[in-house]
Length: 141
Image 1 (cartoon, rainbow, N blue to C red):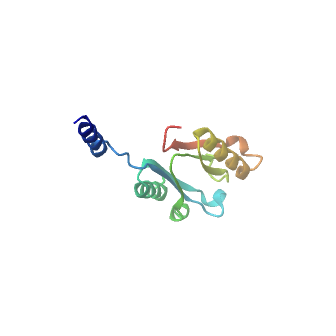
Image 2: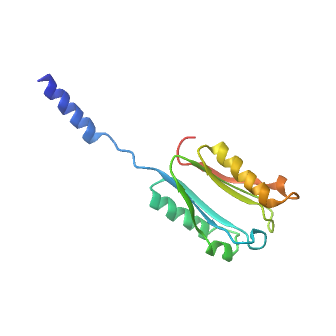
Image 3: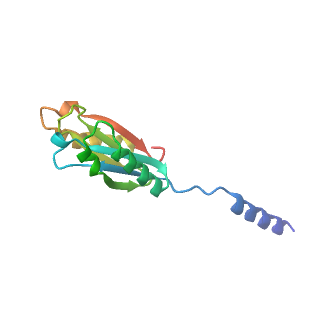
């Protein structure tokens, strides 16, 4: 009898235990060949089912305010991820080339990589102007 009760309890826990849906993230970027001249667009979403994350990231990218239509028309998903963080860094001054993005295991690693890429593309005169403008994780990190 005890064995039957234990089996019944295990079955009830298995049936009624909430199953966590997989959470994913996505980053979409509209990256023209000349960021200095044509700007750049981006969007992201985290902690969502993959299809929703991709849809929202693309929507944000394609409707980014203050970004030339040419950059927004180039928006595409650059990366989807799970259990990671993303960061975007840029030089906020219009008409400058500094831009970088990253997906990494931790927020600090993503921020550092995005900043390094921004500083590399900004050139020596604008490196110090790069700032992380977006940073988020699809998990606690």
